[in-house]
Length: 153
Image (cartoon, rainbow, N blue to C red; front, top):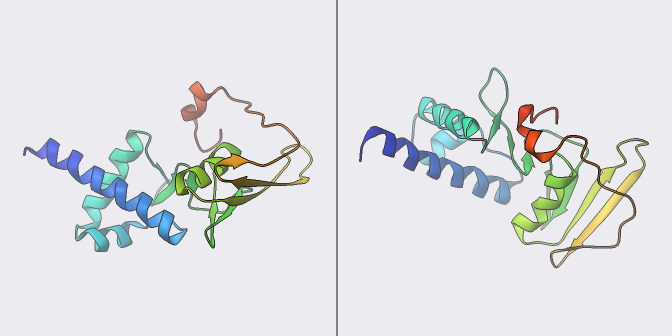
């Protein structure tokens, strides 16, 4: 296996670790945690995180290189709290929040609020279906442009 193939293989292992970890722990793993779990240097993990970010798999925090987003999960609190399987997760937006129960294959309650008036909007996902809800989901930016500035959009 050449060096490029080794990087691709390692990135796949890192990606699996990131998603397995967040689904089990409710938090995204740090560089240090990933380094320890995979018995690789922090530099190797940091480089892998960057390659995964370059491929739009992860979004990294500026400066630290730590994970900010592993869609649909957020490493920081957001207005889109998802409660499922006895854990809490944050989605980056309502779209991601609804994706979390689908990814976990679990029922969930999503605590969100109206984007214009901040009225509480709680949603229930049961057996993979969204329960009765009132309101609309509005995407101000077309999906084709979300990655133009994924943190803002």
